[in-house]
Structure formats: C-alpha cells, structure tokens
Length: 195
Image (tube, rainbow, N blue to C red):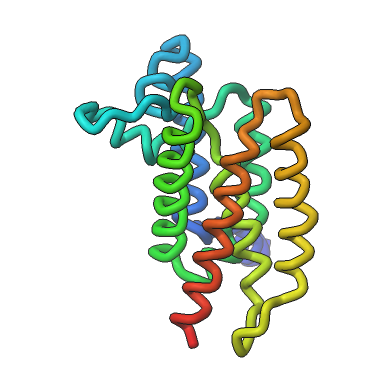
C-alpha cells in the first residue's frame, strides 16, 4: 500500500518559465495596482507621453504589457497566453520567447506613443496577438507560407482592422495589429534562422 502511494505522487513541471513568469509578474502588477489605487499601474505598467529624459518612461516601454485594468482584463489575456505560449516556448526556447515578448512590448509601446501619446496603454494583448501569429507560422517548412497564417491574418487581424474604424470601445486595436505584425516578422525571422 505504501508503495502504491509513493507511485501516485503528482509532480509539477515548470514547463514554460518565460510564459509562467510573465503570468506571475502580470498578476503581481495587477495586485500592486489594486493596493496602490492605480499608482503603480500609472507609474510602471502603462505607457503614455514618452519623453527621453523620463527614466520611468523607459521602464514603461516594456512594463506596459504587464499592466491590466481589471481581473477580467488580466484573465482574458492570460488564458490565451497560457494556451498558446508554452508550446511556442518549447519549440523556440525560453530566450527566444523572452526576446519576442520584449521586442513586441518595445515596438507596440513606441507605436502607441507616436500614434496616441495622450492615452495610456496597458495590457498583454499585443503579446498575445504576437504569439497567435507566431504559432500560425510554427509549422512552416521550406519557406512556404502556411495557409493557417493567411487564415489567421484574414480573420483575426482583418477583424481588428475593421474594429479599428468601427468600434467605439477602449480596446487598442492598433496594439493587436502591431502585435500580430511583430509575431509574423519574428516567425519568419526565426524560421529562416532555423533553416
């Protein structure tokens, strides 16, 4: 009986360290924002009006992807991140996944500051869109463009383009589009390096 109990011990695997740490850091940012009544979210985890002399502006260029407005906002992004991210991290490696996230955060932050500097941007949706487009390129072989990439681009990014001109909400479709373009670029870049 004791041997049977030993065999049934459940082991946990820290299978995608970058994706899991991103999820934990985003949760910590959300909790800190709730505790400080939004001060930490404004100071560290959202991007707006970047000026080269502002030290915190450089942190916000990357940190804005960790910030979330509410639990619902956080959960919506993290569910997709946790579904799509781990297989990609396993395929491309943790360092590549980290650089993909940092690249997407930087590009989306810069584009937002140029396009709409007076509005605060926060959330991981740009990173999620990057991962979605990157996953549609994961099976690319011999330089051929996967049909899944075309379908995802038409359905997901096409929908975001339409929503950018028709939706009257606080969702940043521009960030989704930028994230998707980053994922496409990074997917082609990494597939070329692997070949």
